[in-house]
Image 1 (tube, rainbow, N blue to C red):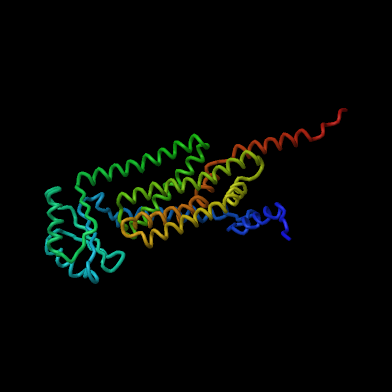
Image 2 (cartoon, helix red, strand yellow):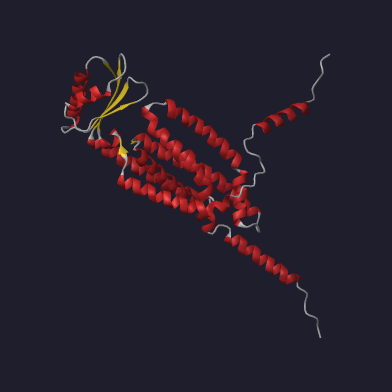
Length: 339
Protein backbone atom coordinates (compact mmCIF):
# COMPACT_ATOMS: atom_id res chain seq x y z
CA UNK A 1 0.00 0.00 0.00
CA UNK A 2 1.27 3.45 -0.91
CA UNK A 3 0.82 6.05 1.82
CA UNK A 4 0.11 9.57 0.59
CA UNK A 5 2.13 12.29 2.32
CA UNK A 6 0.15 15.44 3.06
CA UNK A 7 1.32 18.63 1.41
CA UNK A 8 1.90 20.15 4.83
CA UNK A 9 4.68 17.64 5.51
CA UNK A 10 6.54 18.84 2.41
CA UNK A 11 6.29 22.47 3.46
CA UNK A 12 7.54 21.60 6.94
CA UNK A 13 10.47 19.73 5.42
CA UNK A 14 11.23 22.68 3.16
CA UNK A 15 11.09 25.12 6.07
CA UNK A 16 13.39 22.86 8.12
CA UNK A 17 15.88 22.62 5.23
CA UNK A 18 15.96 26.39 4.78
CA UNK A 19 16.43 26.83 8.52
CA UNK A 20 19.45 24.53 8.47
CA UNK A 21 21.08 26.65 5.74
CA UNK A 22 21.04 29.82 7.86
CA UNK A 23 24.51 30.83 8.99
CA UNK A 24 23.25 33.48 11.43
CA UNK A 25 20.06 33.36 13.54
CA UNK A 26 17.37 35.91 12.79
CA UNK A 27 17.23 37.30 16.33
CA UNK A 28 20.86 38.32 16.88
CA UNK A 29 21.36 41.22 19.28
CA UNK A 30 25.01 42.18 18.88
CA UNK A 31 25.84 45.63 20.21
CA UNK A 32 27.93 46.97 17.33
CA UNK A 33 27.58 50.60 18.32
CA UNK A 34 29.61 50.21 21.50
CA UNK A 35 32.70 49.59 19.34
CA UNK A 36 32.43 52.95 17.56
CA UNK A 37 34.73 54.52 20.16
CA UNK A 38 37.39 52.01 19.03
CA UNK A 39 36.67 51.74 15.30
CA UNK A 40 36.92 55.46 14.52
CA UNK A 41 40.36 56.01 16.12
CA UNK A 42 41.57 52.74 14.61
CA UNK A 43 40.42 53.75 11.13
CA UNK A 44 42.00 57.19 11.52
CA UNK A 45 45.37 55.64 12.43
CA UNK A 46 45.19 53.13 9.56
CA UNK A 47 44.23 55.86 7.08
CA UNK A 48 47.18 58.05 8.13
CA UNK A 49 49.48 55.03 7.90
CA UNK A 50 48.17 54.24 4.40
CA UNK A 51 48.81 57.82 3.26
CA UNK A 52 52.35 57.70 4.70
CA UNK A 53 53.00 54.42 2.86
CA UNK A 54 51.76 55.98 -0.38
CA UNK A 55 54.12 58.97 -0.12
CA UNK A 56 57.11 56.95 1.11
CA UNK A 57 56.98 53.61 -0.70
CA UNK A 58 54.71 54.74 -3.52
CA UNK A 59 52.76 52.53 -5.87
CA UNK A 60 54.42 49.93 -8.04
CA UNK A 61 53.04 51.23 -11.33
CA UNK A 62 52.78 48.58 -14.00
CA UNK A 63 53.57 48.76 -17.68
CA UNK A 64 50.15 50.31 -18.35
CA UNK A 65 51.06 53.50 -16.49
CA UNK A 66 54.83 53.91 -16.84
CA UNK A 67 55.36 52.43 -20.28
CA UNK A 68 57.76 49.68 -21.24
CA UNK A 69 57.57 46.05 -22.27
CA UNK A 70 56.11 43.05 -20.50
CA UNK A 71 57.15 39.60 -21.74
CA UNK A 72 55.71 36.34 -20.39
CA UNK A 73 57.94 33.38 -21.22
CA UNK A 74 58.03 29.67 -20.45
CA UNK A 75 61.04 27.35 -20.47
CA UNK A 76 60.30 24.59 -22.97
CA UNK A 77 62.12 21.92 -20.98
CA UNK A 78 63.06 21.86 -17.33
CA UNK A 79 63.04 24.67 -14.78
CA UNK A 80 63.78 28.27 -15.70
CA UNK A 81 67.15 29.55 -14.42
CA UNK A 82 66.39 33.10 -13.23
CA UNK A 83 70.01 33.98 -12.42
CA UNK A 84 71.21 32.94 -15.86
CA UNK A 85 68.39 34.81 -17.61
CA UNK A 86 69.01 37.91 -15.49
CA UNK A 87 72.71 37.96 -16.29
CA UNK A 88 72.04 37.65 -20.02
CA UNK A 89 69.42 40.43 -20.03
CA UNK A 90 71.53 42.78 -17.90
CA UNK A 91 74.25 42.52 -20.53
CA UNK A 92 71.85 44.17 -23.00
CA UNK A 93 71.90 47.42 -20.94
CA UNK A 94 68.14 47.90 -20.89
CA UNK A 95 68.19 49.42 -17.42
CA UNK A 96 66.39 47.91 -14.44
CA UNK A 97 65.10 44.66 -15.96
CA UNK A 98 62.84 42.76 -13.54
CA UNK A 99 62.30 39.00 -13.62
CA UNK A 100 59.56 37.33 -11.63
CA UNK A 101 58.72 33.64 -11.40
CA UNK A 102 55.03 32.77 -11.26
CA UNK A 103 52.82 29.74 -11.64
CA UNK A 104 55.08 26.79 -12.39
CA UNK A 105 58.88 26.68 -12.07
CA UNK A 106 59.25 27.17 -15.83
CA UNK A 107 57.15 30.39 -16.07
CA UNK A 108 58.89 33.79 -15.90
CA UNK A 109 57.60 37.36 -16.24
CA UNK A 110 60.10 39.85 -17.70
CA UNK A 111 59.62 43.63 -17.33
CA UNK A 112 61.77 45.94 -19.44
CA UNK A 113 61.60 49.70 -18.69
CA UNK A 114 60.77 52.30 -21.30
CA UNK A 115 63.57 52.59 -23.86
CA UNK A 116 64.55 55.90 -25.49
CA UNK A 117 63.56 56.03 -29.13
CA UNK A 118 59.81 55.44 -29.01
CA UNK A 119 57.87 52.46 -30.27
CA UNK A 120 60.63 51.29 -32.62
CA UNK A 121 63.12 51.06 -29.73
CA UNK A 122 60.69 48.95 -27.74
CA UNK A 123 60.24 46.52 -30.61
CA UNK A 124 64.01 46.28 -31.02
CA UNK A 125 64.33 45.48 -27.32
CA UNK A 126 61.90 42.57 -27.73
CA UNK A 127 63.91 41.23 -30.68
CA UNK A 128 67.14 41.44 -28.68
CA UNK A 129 65.53 39.52 -25.81
CA UNK A 130 64.40 36.78 -28.20
CA UNK A 131 67.88 36.53 -29.72
CA UNK A 132 69.60 36.49 -26.31
CA UNK A 133 67.41 33.86 -24.61
CA UNK A 134 67.55 31.53 -27.60
CA UNK A 135 65.16 28.92 -28.95
CA UNK A 136 64.56 27.13 -25.67
CA UNK A 137 62.00 29.74 -24.60
CA UNK A 138 58.32 29.87 -25.50
CA UNK A 139 57.01 33.47 -25.66
CA UNK A 140 53.44 33.38 -24.41
CA UNK A 141 52.67 37.11 -24.14
CA UNK A 142 54.34 40.37 -25.20
CA UNK A 143 52.89 43.78 -24.29
CA UNK A 144 54.47 47.08 -25.36
CA UNK A 145 53.10 50.38 -24.02
CA UNK A 146 54.51 53.73 -25.12
CA UNK A 147 54.96 56.77 -22.83
CA UNK A 148 52.10 58.79 -24.34
CA UNK A 149 49.61 55.92 -24.06
CA UNK A 150 50.66 55.13 -20.49
CA UNK A 151 50.17 58.77 -19.43
CA UNK A 152 46.71 58.82 -21.02
CA UNK A 153 45.74 55.57 -19.32
CA UNK A 154 46.80 56.91 -15.92
CA UNK A 155 44.92 60.19 -16.35
CA UNK A 156 41.78 58.51 -17.68
CA UNK A 157 41.86 55.91 -14.91
CA UNK A 158 42.16 58.59 -12.23
CA UNK A 159 39.38 60.63 -13.87
CA UNK A 160 37.11 57.59 -13.98
CA UNK A 161 37.70 56.93 -10.29
CA UNK A 162 36.89 60.53 -9.33
CA UNK A 163 33.76 60.62 -11.52
CA UNK A 164 32.56 57.35 -9.98
CA UNK A 165 32.90 58.82 -6.47
CA UNK A 166 31.01 61.98 -7.48
CA UNK A 167 28.29 59.93 -9.18
CA UNK A 168 27.82 57.83 -6.06
CA UNK A 169 27.58 60.97 -3.93
CA UNK A 170 24.89 62.49 -6.19
CA UNK A 171 22.92 59.22 -6.29
CA UNK A 172 22.90 58.86 -2.51
CA UNK A 173 22.05 62.51 -2.05
CA UNK A 174 18.81 62.03 -4.01
CA UNK A 175 17.92 58.63 -2.59
CA UNK A 176 18.63 59.37 1.08
CA UNK A 177 19.13 62.42 3.26
CA UNK A 178 22.41 64.32 2.99
CA UNK A 179 23.73 62.66 6.17
CA UNK A 180 23.44 59.23 4.55
CA UNK A 181 25.20 60.43 1.37
CA UNK A 182 28.05 61.99 3.33
CA UNK A 183 28.41 58.92 5.56
CA UNK A 184 28.59 56.55 2.59
CA UNK A 185 31.07 58.85 0.86
CA UNK A 186 33.38 58.90 3.87
CA UNK A 187 33.15 55.11 4.10
CA UNK A 188 33.99 54.66 0.41
CA UNK A 189 36.99 56.98 0.56
CA UNK A 190 38.11 55.09 3.67
CA UNK A 191 38.02 51.82 1.68
CA UNK A 192 39.99 53.29 -1.23
CA UNK A 193 42.65 54.85 1.00
CA UNK A 194 43.26 51.63 2.94
CA UNK A 195 43.37 49.56 -0.26
CA UNK A 196 45.93 51.89 -1.85
CA UNK A 197 48.00 51.71 1.34
CA UNK A 198 47.80 47.91 1.20
CA UNK A 199 49.03 47.90 -2.40
CA UNK A 200 51.86 50.28 -1.49
CA UNK A 201 52.91 48.08 1.42
CA UNK A 202 53.04 44.88 -0.62
CA UNK A 203 54.21 46.66 -3.79
CA UNK A 204 51.52 45.01 -5.88
CA UNK A 205 51.42 45.95 -9.55
CA UNK A 206 49.19 48.98 -10.01
CA UNK A 207 47.80 48.79 -13.54
CA UNK A 208 44.45 49.05 -15.29
CA UNK A 209 43.17 45.96 -13.48
CA UNK A 210 43.91 47.75 -10.18
CA UNK A 211 41.74 50.69 -11.29
CA UNK A 212 39.00 48.16 -12.08
CA UNK A 213 39.47 46.66 -8.61
CA UNK A 214 39.10 50.07 -6.94
CA UNK A 215 35.92 50.79 -8.91
CA UNK A 216 34.55 47.34 -8.01
CA UNK A 217 35.36 47.95 -4.34
CA UNK A 218 33.40 51.22 -4.50
CA UNK A 219 30.34 49.48 -5.90
CA UNK A 220 30.55 46.42 -3.65
CA UNK A 221 31.03 48.40 -0.45
CA UNK A 222 28.31 50.85 -1.46
CA UNK A 223 25.84 48.02 -2.07
CA UNK A 224 26.37 46.63 1.43
CA UNK A 225 26.13 50.11 2.96
CA UNK A 226 22.93 50.97 1.08
CA UNK A 227 21.24 47.77 2.30
CA UNK A 228 21.94 48.76 5.91
CA UNK A 229 21.02 52.41 5.30
CA UNK A 230 17.71 51.40 3.74
CA UNK A 231 16.82 49.38 6.83
CA UNK A 232 17.87 52.27 9.11
CA UNK A 233 15.71 54.72 7.16
CA UNK A 234 12.74 52.35 7.35
CA UNK A 235 13.12 51.98 11.11
CA UNK A 236 13.53 55.73 11.61
CA UNK A 237 10.03 56.18 10.18
CA UNK A 238 8.58 53.34 12.22
CA UNK A 239 10.11 53.88 15.66
CA UNK A 240 9.89 57.53 16.66
CA UNK A 241 11.06 57.19 20.25
CA UNK A 242 13.83 54.58 19.95
CA UNK A 243 17.37 55.93 20.58
CA UNK A 244 19.43 56.14 17.39
CA UNK A 245 22.29 53.83 18.52
CA UNK A 246 19.83 51.11 19.49
CA UNK A 247 17.95 51.54 16.21
CA UNK A 248 21.14 51.21 14.15
CA UNK A 249 22.09 48.08 16.09
CA UNK A 250 18.75 46.47 15.25
CA UNK A 251 19.11 47.43 11.58
CA UNK A 252 22.59 45.88 11.31
CA UNK A 253 21.49 42.69 13.07
CA UNK A 254 18.51 42.43 10.73
CA UNK A 255 20.80 42.43 7.67
CA UNK A 256 23.64 40.44 9.24
CA UNK A 257 22.65 37.05 7.81
CA UNK A 258 22.44 38.44 4.28
CA UNK A 259 25.78 40.23 4.63
CA UNK A 260 27.64 37.16 5.92
CA UNK A 261 26.31 34.86 3.19
CA UNK A 262 27.26 37.42 0.51
CA UNK A 263 30.76 37.97 1.88
CA UNK A 264 31.47 34.25 2.31
CA UNK A 265 30.45 33.57 -1.30
CA UNK A 266 32.57 36.43 -2.66
CA UNK A 267 35.53 35.37 -0.50
CA UNK A 268 35.48 31.81 -1.85
CA UNK A 269 35.43 33.09 -5.44
CA UNK A 270 38.23 35.60 -4.84
CA UNK A 271 40.44 33.09 -3.04
CA UNK A 272 40.12 30.71 -5.99
CA UNK A 273 41.15 33.49 -8.39
CA UNK A 274 43.97 34.58 -6.08
CA UNK A 275 45.44 31.08 -5.82
CA UNK A 276 44.87 29.80 -9.34
CA UNK A 277 44.22 32.88 -11.49
CA UNK A 278 47.84 33.55 -12.45
CA UNK A 279 49.84 36.79 -12.48
CA UNK A 280 47.60 38.66 -14.92
CA UNK A 281 44.81 39.15 -12.37
CA UNK A 282 46.85 38.76 -9.18
CA UNK A 283 46.79 42.48 -8.33
CA UNK A 284 43.06 42.66 -9.03
CA UNK A 285 42.13 39.70 -6.84
CA UNK A 286 44.50 40.70 -4.01
CA UNK A 287 43.08 44.23 -3.92
CA UNK A 288 39.52 42.90 -4.08
CA UNK A 289 40.09 40.39 -1.29
CA UNK A 290 41.50 43.06 1.00
CA UNK A 291 39.39 46.06 -0.03
CA UNK A 292 35.99 44.52 -0.68
CA UNK A 293 35.83 41.57 1.70
CA UNK A 294 37.93 42.62 4.70
CA UNK A 295 37.84 46.43 4.69
CA UNK A 296 34.43 46.73 3.02
CA UNK A 297 32.69 44.52 5.57
CA UNK A 298 34.36 46.31 8.48
CA UNK A 299 33.51 49.73 7.05
CA UNK A 300 29.83 49.03 6.42
CA UNK A 301 29.24 47.94 10.01
CA UNK A 302 31.72 49.92 12.11
CA UNK A 303 32.20 53.14 10.08
CA UNK A 304 29.32 53.88 7.71
CA UNK A 305 26.58 53.00 10.20
CA UNK A 306 27.78 54.63 13.45
CA UNK A 307 28.91 57.78 11.64
CA UNK A 308 25.22 58.58 11.16
CA UNK A 309 25.03 59.23 14.90
CA UNK A 310 27.68 61.96 14.67
CA UNK A 311 26.07 63.42 11.54
CA UNK A 312 22.82 64.01 13.43
CA UNK A 313 20.55 61.38 11.88
CA UNK A 314 17.45 60.97 14.03
CA UNK A 315 18.03 64.13 16.08
CA UNK A 316 14.92 65.87 14.74
CA UNK A 317 12.90 62.69 15.27
CA UNK A 318 14.00 62.43 18.91
CA UNK A 319 13.33 66.15 19.44
CA UNK A 320 9.77 65.75 18.11
CA UNK A 321 9.23 62.70 20.32
CA UNK A 322 10.34 64.64 23.40
CA UNK A 323 8.09 67.55 22.45
CA UNK A 324 5.11 65.22 22.02
CA UNK A 325 5.84 63.57 25.35
CA UNK A 326 6.07 66.99 27.05
CA UNK A 327 2.81 68.10 25.45
CA UNK A 328 1.10 64.88 26.51
CA UNK A 329 2.37 65.30 30.05
CA UNK A 330 1.16 68.90 30.13
CA UNK A 331 -2.26 67.86 28.84
CA UNK A 332 -2.56 65.11 31.46
CA UNK A 333 -1.67 67.48 34.32
CA UNK A 334 -4.82 68.30 36.40
CA UNK A 335 -6.08 71.88 36.16
CA UNK A 336 -5.81 74.06 39.30
CA UNK A 337 -8.97 74.22 41.46
CA UNK A 338 -11.13 77.38 41.24
CA UNK A 339 -11.53 79.48 44.37
